[in-house]
Amino acid sequence: MSSQSVVFDPLTLPCGKVLKNRVVKAAMEENMAATGCLPDHNLFSLYRYWAHGDLGMVITGNVMVDRQAMTGAGGVVLEKQTCIEPFVRWAKVIKSGGACAVMQINHPGRQVFRAVSATALAPSEVPLKMGQYTKQFAQPREMTCEDIYAVTQRFVDTAKKAQQAGFDGVEIHAAHGYLLAQFLSPLTNQRQDQWGGALANRARLLLNIVSQIKAVCHSGFLVMVKLNASDFQRGGLTLDEAKTIVGYLNKLDIDCVEVSGGNYEAPAMQGKSGDEQVLGKHGYFTEFAAQIAQVATMPVMTTGGIVSLRSAEQVLAQGCELLGMASALATTPDLVRKWQQMPGYKGSIPDCDWQDKTLASIVKMSMVRRQLRRLGNDLSTMRSPRPLWSLILDMLHRQRQVRRLRRDKQNAGE
Image (cartoon, rainbow, N blue to C red):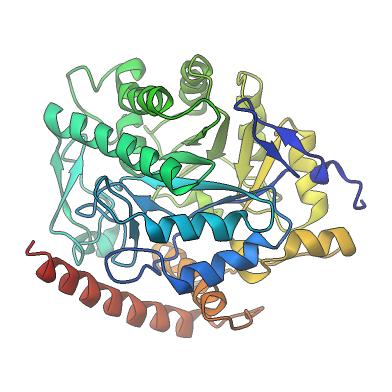
């Protein structure tokens, strides 16, 4: 291992964008938006650390395409009518160190907290099964065809605004149990019309969104898709189906597929499988991504569990051309630069061994978001934040964000 590692080789994407190396800061949900669901100085400060961390690409956290459908009260929203100036500044911050700036765009579908909205759009009326936590989520409503067309247009409008703001591209989130993943999964999509049943029908919404974004944005605008290799649930999306979807995407000339997995019910993206499938110790989805890379004509990226240069090299050796890092960059935002100076340096990912797996997953996310908020306030990160105190702080932060969101809605007359 050295600074001459393949990890630091540049890569030219199909759209012509050149990444200076193979490391991507993958999306994390910060819940740090300001009034109006806009990015402000806290997010700018946070992303400045990554911008100058020698990364090839920086993907933003969830940017919602609809302010009525958000994963959390502190989410960023970019709609057709949204003021664009904060997003212009955000793009400039991300690109200030030479990284490619990509906005992840998303609709949560049924994965909406009741505190944010009482109802949620979904392909079918299949509620989340989260045990004692189920009541915290909104009741899903089956989407009409008009709803589906409206959501498609929202994705297109948000992509156009991202391009206008100066972002190099967008990543369409079709993983982790959010709306597009819900359409892809037979567990959550039980429709009998042109949007359900056969895989080609279940993939129709995703493919329509990709096609329309490609049609309205210029040829050099980067378009990525984040896709589950598997739902890691019995009866959910399978690896073979994911490979077939990638075959569909091959025909649309997208620039990259990011391979991940899981959802709120089976959080494989945090290293926890809901079925018997085994996740990799060094890169949770590396083996799945390697199989997808065999059928993909575009570069493949995988994210999850990478903390060392050796692990990163192993991911690339198995067929991926890009590797995504998230939680490790929350603790050590300059981890890639450290690898260049000290190839043996190892990052860290928060862990929680509480017996309640759902609560442990929530705690891990709380620990990550605590680090992100510290960076946004220009404070140093903590190598081992305490789980319980991180959860308490995150709950208090979310309560403040919920109150702010309600004030925003009242001021807007919603």
